[in-house]
Image (cartoon, rainbow, N blue to C red; front, side):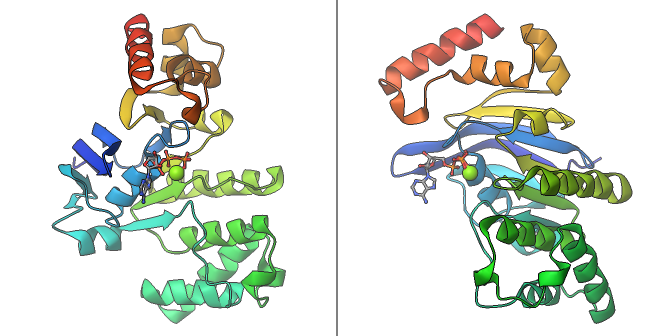
Length: 265
Ligand SMILES: Nc1ncnc2c1ncn2[C@@H]1O[C@H](COP(=O)(O)OP(=O)(O)OP(=O)(O)O)[C@@H](O)[C@H]1O
Ligand SMILES: [Mg+2]
């Protein structure tokens, strides 16, 4: 069967900095995939390529069987995305933001209204639907963005840190929604998160650092393989404890990574 996502030797640089470095991976349809890595690892850059918002320097990417470069229209029709950065129109109400989104995706009016109510209730914004988004708190804005991402029924849904800044109540609800669309619609979910607790719920996770794929496996397999207590320990063992901009030098960083990978293998 055609994989939902297939990436082969993908490279993307920004002014000499290699943000995505020879990345290859395949994700079968219906998988809940966790794309992990420290700040600046290249996760959002990869998502932007897969969503056809950014062209790679080299390599190829296919989503839902379509080429992200040559068939960008088909890819866009097949996907949904919850962006890391805010992308709501703050001058409009919550309702208008969703209405606009539903129209772009050609959801017929009745179905659109049904979905809008469903997702607004899901993120507990139904009562606030006629308020201007500018008057929302940060968490409420995030909830509205998640609601919008869940509104149409894409085959592949990208979620770039969907639960960041959310209270535990909303996080729980969003996870319930994720589980539901997965079981009911077999949507492929490609998500990034810095919560290792959330990552542990994924079918498989990849850990990326400096644009390179370090490992890709089931969370429990990674934990067992390294004799770690949990995924956080695996993550820290592989990517180190230093903050990204604290690294002494690029060479030192590379040497450390090679040492770690040797130990790992
Ligand atoms: N538009 C841009 N111009 C220049 N450099 C960029 C641009 N976007 C990203 N980068 C750089 O590319 C690297 C990867 O960034 P990216 O946003 O993909 O990381 P990320 O894994 O999503 O990080 P985070 O967890 O902080 O969201 C970083 O070093 C970043 O500074
Ligand atoms: Mg990011």
